[in-house]
Image 1 (tube, rainbow, N blue to C red):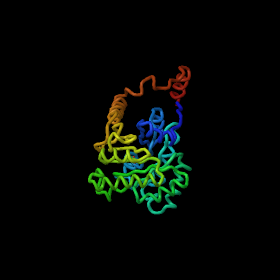
Image 2 (image 1 turned 45 degrees about the vertical axis):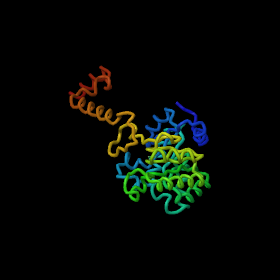
Image 3 (image 1 turned 180 degrees about the vertical axis):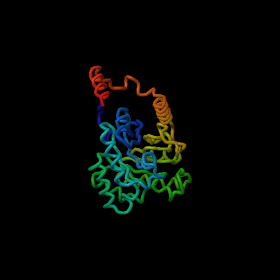
Image 4 (image 1 turned 90 degrees about the horizontal axis):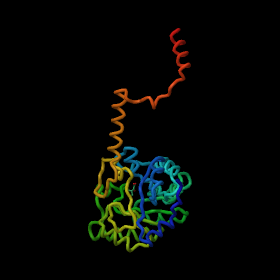
Length: 284
Ligand code: KIV
């Protein structure tokens, strides 16, 4: 069923009307089709796909080609939700012109509506250049998985007064540079609430408390499909992983016991043709 396309203006209006924005990751056509039949505002093709779809230990391994491949699949399954393509590690950090070109590929080749990139003040010039090229940018500060090695692991950020203040400066710099929204990941709820109040653009939290203008979760976490990393901020809304294991085990047992395929799953043959076939075979 087709629904009206969510636009950047709808997302900005949600902040004014205090209607929480909902964002979920998706990485393939089928997941996009399912999510797009709900009222979710935004689908993020996150570089978390490196871990949950490709089995990498983290997100730094993910390439532009891999991101574009998954973005295209999600775009084919989406009509209504606003689409965010996550710029992978080293596709925007080295050079501003390269960042603009790579950002453009998400819209031109992969059907995304905007890009997301990680980093605070140090990314302001890059954000400014991409936005100037006509590409909307979503920021991402706090726990930034692409720099997890520098952060010393997947740890909560902004816990000290100085670190919290630094996050506020990052958020303000990204807003000034032209970001239309910012993801706040794994920071204390009070810090996220204050940033949300200070900004005129929406914040979307993941492990950042209920005062953010919206929330995002990884599809596999929300559905109980991936249990290798289970941060405190994840809520399991469905044990789909368990349901898959039960279904696959039942299938395996039924095949072994010749209970599957049953008659209704089998193509019959016309009686006369079958008899003729048997006679022909008997003569050989
Ligand atoms: O890659 C991703 O899924 C993300 C979200 C966790 C915000 O960046």
